[in-house]
Image (cartoon, rainbow, N blue to C red; front, side, top):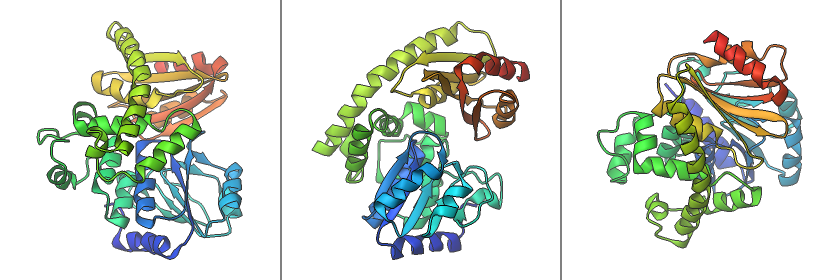
Length: 344
């Protein structure tokens, strides 16, 4: 079960009764789609995409001072510091599917509190609240590797985007037209902040998925053009990665690259685990003396491995059972990888 009717009603009441909401949301498709649903329903407020790390801490209090909200919504953010929550003087509504965690001074909505197995994407939970923008809810859910029960309704309303024989999330993500849209949503929130914010502003006004995929409007053309620019860089990395993985017999397939601006670690690792499903995938990007990356596996529970591998090292990491992120100092990365290999 996801949200109860009571929980969905409570969130909607917060949304309906506020005048100037502030939305903090994660910088992936699930977080973006959760924000888009609530913002497009409310048509008021401010959105802050959290790109530095999946963590909301005291440094973000300045955004509250700048926007003076009457309600703060936190969407798909894995960790929120208690110090941050204690400093916010208006109601805070945290909708998420990580953890769960115990916090005070927050209205916390996470199905995993009741059942650890109830891992519903945040965009799915937000659809329970606003019951609009089916295509955005479906995109965000599938992008987070969850096929929602309303997928057939989506097929009927938006024909040609997901074939009937595509049953699993990976099939849809990597082999369907909806999958292309999922990649578009991922790529337009990469790069310079001003470019990202412009794309998000345009997405708040897009009417349907065909507007982007078929470039039916100036807004759709703008988003698609931005995607094409970023996709050139991704394809170059993917072709290099694929060539190295096809000649590697190790259980853990490791790929690293250096880039100060563009992060494709999550995108590369997701496609790699689909194409090389029997392996454990680790993708890392070197930036500012740190190795930031993603780990994927279809079989092994990853968080305990990462936690053990980080003991005594400078870094952090965690996430879902089969999909995690990490950030390790460059000088500790070799030891981190060695410890992961030893455990698997």
